[in-house]
Length: 279
Figure 1 (spheres, rainbow, N blue to C red):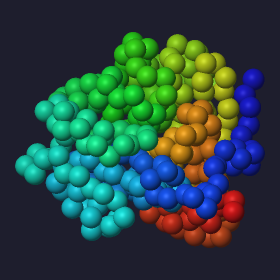
Figure 2: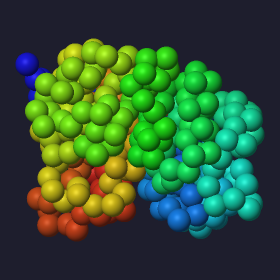
Figure 3: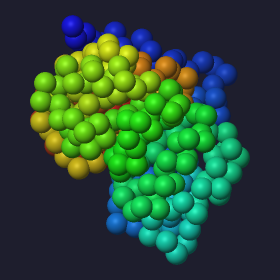
Figure 4: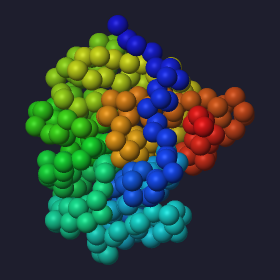
């Protein structure tokens, strides 16, 4: 049996109190981007702020840091390398030091990283060492296997689309509900299978998202979803609830835009998110 998500998921959004400040409403760290894919980190960071993160840090290479500084000045962009086009295993110790120094509450790993072998080694080591809630998306998913996931932290949300799901689990979700249910019983993390009416599964329990439309079939919208879920994790929301809320809001924003005849792109989607979050 599949449960349908409703507006009730909005109850998980914490309200800011009079004593709130940027340091206690969620610090998000993002490991994303490469010289050829700077936009993924930009979109992910913008979405985290739209979801109410207090501070957002992007750890990447110099080209990405420059793009972030030029387009999202609120973000603290930290360049780990001025010469490399992509992050590699040699950046691990530097990355861990920065994450600890800035007291990050939750991490997003993957958007636009690329699939270089050394990048995959970095992701594997990083995931094994971090003790933080995590979103693992996009290129980072190609660093994993079902066997490895069993040894990794449980406070993690995996967000594959169909192709990434097939690579990660060696199964094609032709019967989406049953395959996702079966896989979620074999791993400890929360699993989101993206697509029209995305499925969110954990320990065999599956929920279906009724929001969203084909307008989301655009480059970068998955990066936006990662930013939403990451910000919710940073606020202390449990991974399952963060995934359900992020997916529901992502689709509901697209539906709002369609109803109002607005052009849906990843950038305009981020701009419209605050219009849909209940006050």
